[in-house]
Length: 144
Image (cartoon, rainbow, N blue to C red; front, side, top):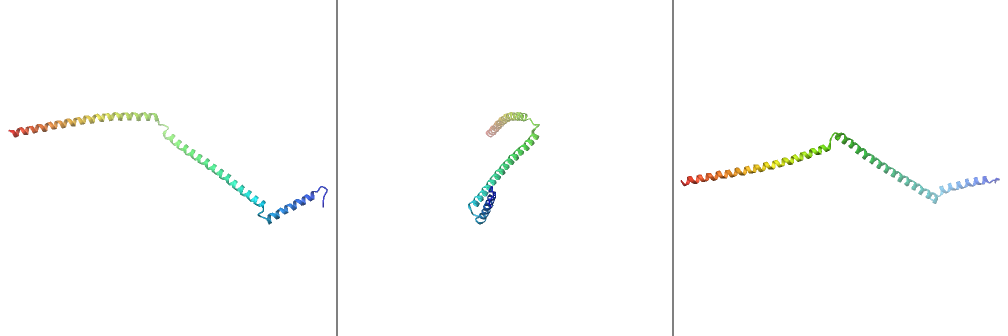
């Protein structure tokens, strides 16, 4: 059954070859070709898993940076709302002036304490003089 151009023989050979391959697949499932296909499937699934993991990691990283920037922006807005009318330079100057006045107050307190100690010392001396005067009077009375 040959035709002039040989197309019929080629068609029959292709069909025969395809049937033989199907039979080989069914009869020999562990053949080298089937094993290669199984390996390729595993490799593809692993590659797909790796790609998916990489995409998920990238999404998580993007979400984390977005969350961080949103968090910082919200606190910056709160900060701006609370402190927009405050002049920090003026506050610093006021604190410095208060500190200097406290230093002056400390000096005044030291002087007052020194004066109080001097008064106490003078009062103690006067008391001692009075006691000695009384003792002399008593001694004079005893001698009489």
